[in-house]
Image 1 (cartoon, helix red, strand yellow):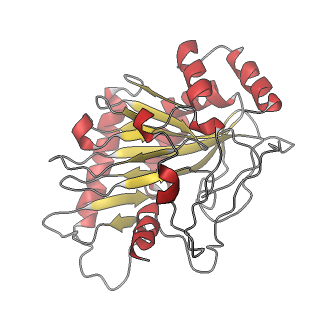
Image 2 (cartoon, helix red, strand yellow):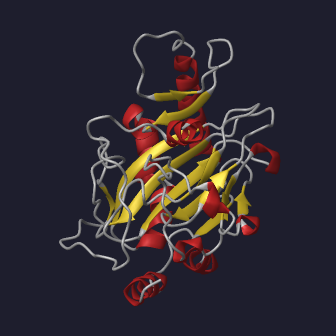
Image 3 (cartoon, rainbow, N blue to C red):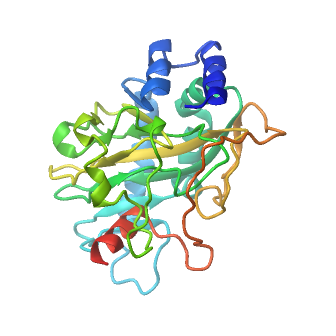
Length: 307
């Protein structure tokens, strides 16, 4: 962490917290992540589950379709009888309940507690991690996908159902946000969206903390934190609704992903910044997806395995 960033974080800690405890805020700044239970109540969970089940039913119709439905990222063996959704893309663009939650729900208080009074929404996704082998997410960092001018960018998730250890909760490596940013390209220059196998042994993955919990448990991780999850070999899906936010003075460097959505870069707390704050540490750039289109992390990582 550089001196300017430390000063920003100290100023945030001096503000009264909206939802998190000071211990939770200090853990996030020290370790780059936190997990907490009981911050999303039963009313919100019921509403989110209801609309999520609507999309599961819609997905049953997407079999042998000649035209791809961009809302969904489906596993190869998805069927109408046994739906297997990897991801619902940009849920906030697809149903007003998701946007209401992302812009007015507890996520915004959490974001303010960790980013300060002026907060922007960046993007959302709903990762299902389906039962019976739902795909692994290899170790990676987020900021290389959507670089910003500084690193006060984070992702908040909520588990829509109880998540136990065998259901492949997300794991995060403590303090990795203060370490290097890794190359997410392979030796041939192909983007894979994951840290290469030769580097994984150096990451300290044995120290990773896996963040599960009861329905309504939240996860928060900084955009530099190394994280991933194994396949879900249990008998139940593991739906995790994720929303990314940034402080108002963190500006996207590319227009590849995230901020291009209907609500991308929308102020959800406070006001817009009239200046951009630049972190002196360099940030790697992703490929230019403007012509070919962005594939999900699952597809990129799978392509990397097949190359």
